[in-house]
Image 1 (cartoon, rainbow, N blue to C red):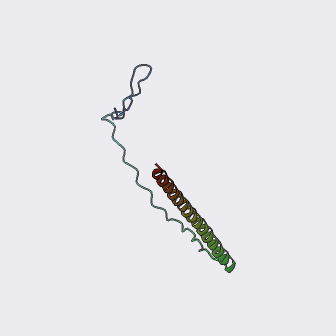
Image 2 (image 1 turned 30 degrees about the vertical axis):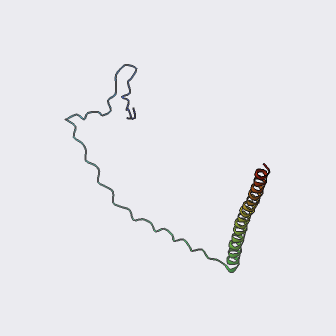
Image 3 (image 1 turned 45 degrees about the horizontal axis):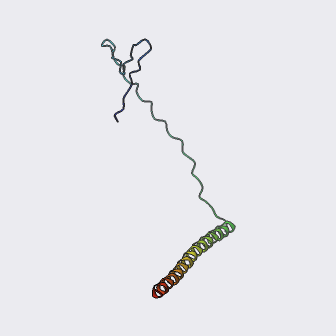
Length: 107
């Protein structure tokens, strides 16, 4: 079921084309042509290294600092949101526990 099937391509005349054609005995294979001599590669011009001017270095440092501050503020705000949620859930749990205990005592 999972094995691939290679069709033999039946023609409308009900003749089929075989996958491999036999080679007649009277034809000799021709040898492969000799490889051409390798061409000498042209030298690739070297790329210049990145040169920072003092102004661009200051801009790069300021941009990096801004990214660090923004990411830090986002992470701290997420941590604060989790801490506030946990504290409010803890308060609700204590209040519910006290209410359930008072209901059971009143029986």
